[in-house]
Length: 638
Image (cartoon, rainbow, N blue to C red):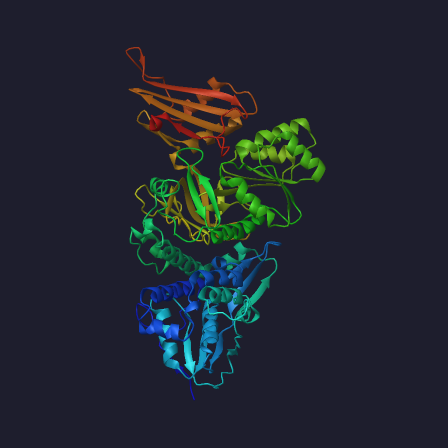
């Protein structure tokens, strides 16, 4: 007898069975819909069909999500699993069509477990059963919200399918004897997700010598589909938060729907984040890590990462650290600062501790004695830190020990001047000097491989999706400079959707010497680096570029205004003595805002421009982040 085909339904009508590739997050969203239906309408015929069959406990979304996360080594990274002990990946793919049997009176539970995990793996499913109508009810429930799911067919018991894989699903493992407690049964299902039969629903291919970035680039034609699936999952999970409930988010189907979602401005984030508000919290059981953000300027806020979010961040960060130049066996001095919940030290220590490297986490303010002891006693060959704190320490270390060598210098938190990079290469013999862009709000945004320099960075579209928009939020073409919006695709607690992070840059397609082709970000600094005074405008980044010839390491611009008086003071840090008059004259010749004579009116000074040249390390650092504020606008603070 031939198989009877069950219609494949969706909210928009019939969906072809070949609508894949499929993503396990869509299965989780379908299960969540059923879970909500069981709670909302427990007496409905469909709900009673699940309850009477004793399978309602299988529709516990959070338990299933944890089980799939363990099954795939990261449900949000699917279809790849990056390895921590090497820069390789495991690739997952469906086995094709799998067959489950629902022939015994109590077999529905086993067959339904098989269906859920097979669909999560992207497999089409055939169920041999004498009760096709019951399976039609289950399928209708799962397909009702319209998320893409593989095919399901029912067939007569005993029917043969030579091209399919027949899977015998064993009973759930016993936990402390027989029990009917739904919580315990759901936990048993979560544990069963990693059993041998469940792993057999996917093909696993180890790809030696293939990095996560290379695997994703090779599957670039599937990027839009992956991003769309992550967006669907993010938006549906965001609906749990009161802030997003109030916005009535539109339904996301494809990647282009991103632009239909509202922009999250920094003021809104601050208003609705801890400690002011819990509007961005889902209400789920607390887990994970909380980080302080907004530490350098403005009021601190606190960013919540659930345990799953935190794990995703680490899984995505380790391949980035490999791409920056770390290798197994490296000995890394971690000089990033923590304190008061600031995230640099906490995140980096968690990432490095999972890699096959030896790490020396200084914790407090690093000094030359720390560096020299670790190099001499432990043969440390790499250092990680923020330029404003790291460079003065390395120069002091070099002065105390001229033979000092550091092979790899990885930095983040602020840009590094090209003259400083050259000093690291010339004086310390650094073979790798590479930048990582990251933020406490959403972790890593971009990174530099060995072939990149300046402010150019590879982007992490599968993790943090970046848009470039104008001041009104309209999308800008590739290559145009604008404000950056960040959507954190794998951070589900305190979701960040189209967050105006406060940076500017431009994105364009680039074929890199490392072999990767795709979008890259030219990072151009903070959006508050646009300095307007005296009816003129200049960019902080342009000032920094003009001062490169003076070998400065840090630049700070302070603007003030009182009544009709306006003033700009530019302060520099450099390892060599600078003549303020010479620097001032150079800047006046380059910037219309600063040029010409200072303006007076009836012996009253209306506009004043001054330059202060300081030694390295003399500008104040923020006590929490260690950063130097690039622009201080006293007009905003007054």
